[in-house]
Image (tube, rainbow, N blue to C red; front, side):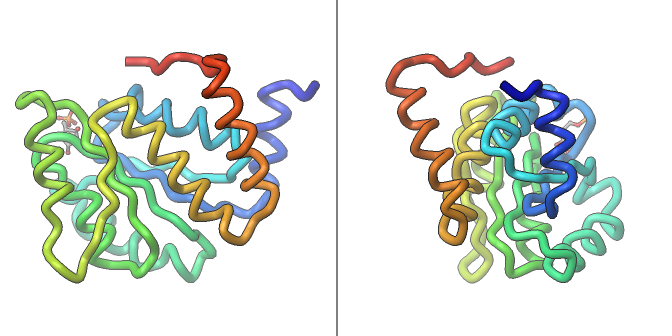
Length: 172
Ligand code: RP5
């Protein structure tokens, strides 16, 4: 059986398919639930901390160049006013998956912000917090599986694990 560092090294060698962005370092702990699952599916990803409000130019510049770099899916986690997923969606035609993170208003602010995108600029809004972070990874895998039998197989294995209750619990 391959060790986790070896798996991560192998994933790194393959082409990056998913961009995982988050609005702050303080989001990383919850978003780790997403990264762990992407590792499980052996999907290569990159992680960036970018803020729609604090680093607006860097955020739009990053979003604009994702497609030409071969990225296929964007996952964006943010709390509070949570404009990051919408800002990413404004600058790319790639599918954007939004993860509302718990904030001072128990995450309702983030949830409403991400789920209420105007017509023409969709963001696939996940559940709040750790469950949403995990589901973002699963949805990204499902999108990639449309053209990858390997990822499809891993999704099927994951379903079997879920049914057995043998998948590790979320971190907070
Ligand atoms: C949002 O503000 C971030 O996504 C984060 O969830 C929240 C708080 O950020 P910090 O003040 O902890 O950096 O932009």
